[in-house]
Length: 374
Image 1 (tube, rainbow, N blue to C red):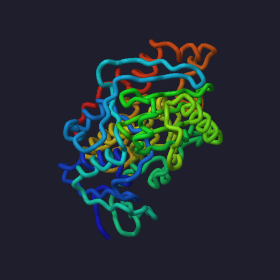
Image 2 (cartoon, rainbow, N blue to C red; image 1 turned 120 degrees about the horizontal axis):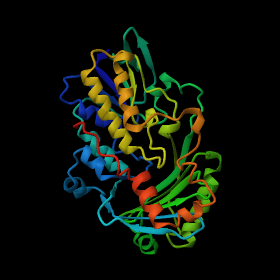
Image 3 (cartoon, rainbow, N blue to C red; image 1 turned 90 degrees about the vertical axis):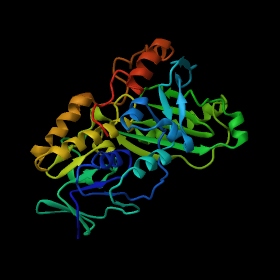
């Protein structure tokens, strides 16, 4: 049996950020992931300057051999009607490829890694957790996404009425012929809202790479909505007529409607494992990074790993992201006040699509970066 102070299950942005933040803590850390890296990760893939600042990523170094698409504009519309295009002037976000971004963050981790290693068992023995009958630690952190095995130890919370968003998307490198016919521009991601406002689709070009996808709260209608959107984008020339490969699916919880517990004795959840995706956009990279830094601060200074000692983390999450709504406010991203007969007009407004949809819901420009250091 190999003993550690902390086992992190999941080597994505949340898990790697946590391990990196604790590199000087003196704690023995093991990070486990079922996949090898670089990995093929389904994600639209854009991060705000706040994320890059928080992670202290040198943009010149990162962009030297990796995709880093500056974003200055957004094109937003409701399906079936013309889109509105807004120019923000400055760079407001960056397009990245998750296979590169995640590998970059994990490469910074100095702690031992067990990749290509599915977690088959997690057993409580006294005050410790034993993983796969091989590794033992008093604290285990779930960072493995929506279906993280550590999250299953805590259950789904009271009521189990969580709103799960399902998404399907594809990312591929375009041929010269495809790139020539694709009208989508790299500095201008496109967001297209479903007419019932229960989800949205996107077209995001990153150099020669193109990402297309759609997410909704009712996954039984997901494929039909996606096909209708793809057909519309092809007909208008926004995307090439020939798309290679198949669309891959994934799921996540929205913060305001998640009921999943965050911690218990010797256990914590961060990132998508904890259901921290922003409620209005479904974006999860920034909450994953910030939750990892909050968890690192608590882990480094907690007197022990009891639930009462770790509750400081739960309090920090609530202070940063707000209290969860619970059963009284079920629904998806868009607030009820938008779901009115005026919705179509709002999505044609330059002020609304810029100030509310882009800057507030998707970029969260009013929220400063976390003050904790990586």
